[in-house]
Length: 297
Image 1 (spheres, rainbow, N blue to C red):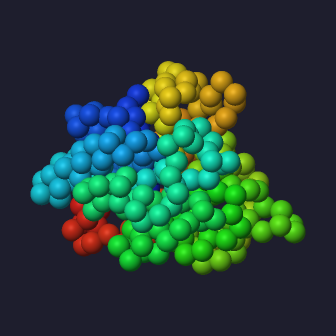
Image 2 (image 1 turned 90 degrees about the horizontal axis):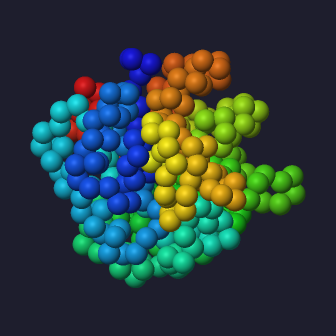
């Protein structure tokens, strides 16, 4: 893995640090540690919260990204924030707090992000609830992704969020975004840790979906590389990444560990990892040449 660079579009933190409430110095620590694992760039991912707290974290990540573009030294590059909360279907909330969810409207998005929306790169939305937000995000160059959804159409979403998880399963008669994401031209995020997706389902995906449309992600929890219980979304999460009811919250592995295991288990090759763990993300995120040059150092 030493020669394989990675980009993680979906990570909530690691080393005991939660991006939803992490300080400036804590975030810089995580970025340095991820860089050591050849994770060269990330989209730090925020779960749903009140606008004040969301804007506070957007401000911190915006500050860090601007500083990095001026002078980066052995840190994972902040490529933009992934908002995975607020515009989700309450029936598919997973571990998240549905009391803070909002209807996916332009006004609600502007109220949530305030003056810091320029740092937002990805927004997860339940497309069946959309009320104009998806098209607005596309106009602004932000990637809308379908997730935490009971819907059966992607609408204009460009990807799915952690495919198969927090969405209706594939059925031979009933439509779902899980099925749509496999058979149309969209991208899909995939937590290939063999917990969120089984080996057989990964095999099926690799036979159906073009490899240039699959993005490997970690969905890593603050408990990854930490090995202790944590509090996440105001719930106690054990070392297996589950709450007291057994709900799976996210992964306890960072993307480098997931990819090492995929190679070890002969599920993916080194070339596959480079494609699905790095190159596809560069294309999907529409990164500029300066960002690409930093990532390839």
